[in-house]
Length: 251
Image (cartoon, one colour):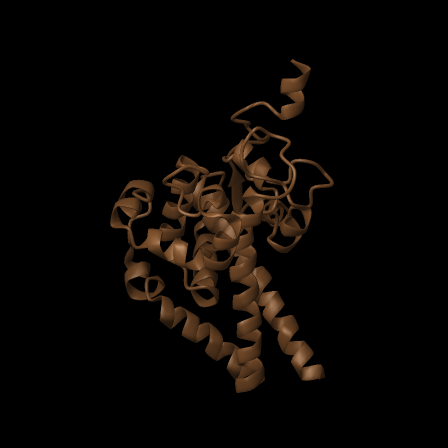
């Protein structure tokens, strides 16, 4: 039982490491240019992404940018308003993969992220990266516990990221006038991604939890990287694309 609990905990730790790479590197830095990471840190996040989830960053960036271009209307790759939130929650992986295979989407929305030599040699070989990551867990904990840790990581990562698209556009609060929502529990398990209404209100902000009580682990990590000169933030304060609902009522 103790070893099983350890495997679950390790899986959850890997899940959070993958979340951090997703929100800081792929989402805030690569997709929205909200911050710039130095080259060693960028490479580190690329490697972490490769061995934990096998996602090709340029594909993730292209799909996400298209989501912002067609938010909750026809053309959105994973809109719960168009497809239903249950379908998005349960089939988000398939919806993502379908759009990621669209060469037109990649060419249009990720033209600033051309394939480089590291992609050709390593990072575009998704199964190799995932195989190395799982093999490392098996080496550390043995076949059974290593596979359990990998299963815990992948299931929690896939379901929580699906929830950002599904729950984060269906349930929760909308302080700003957009179709996304703020969901506290979702923010806590996705390194801040649950403050999705905030994000759609200020897509180029490196900080997604705008208020002190809005816990944003991704921003805490970014602040640490800034302290050591490893990251540079684009805006000191969030630049809103529209007024908050409170401001509109007051007007």
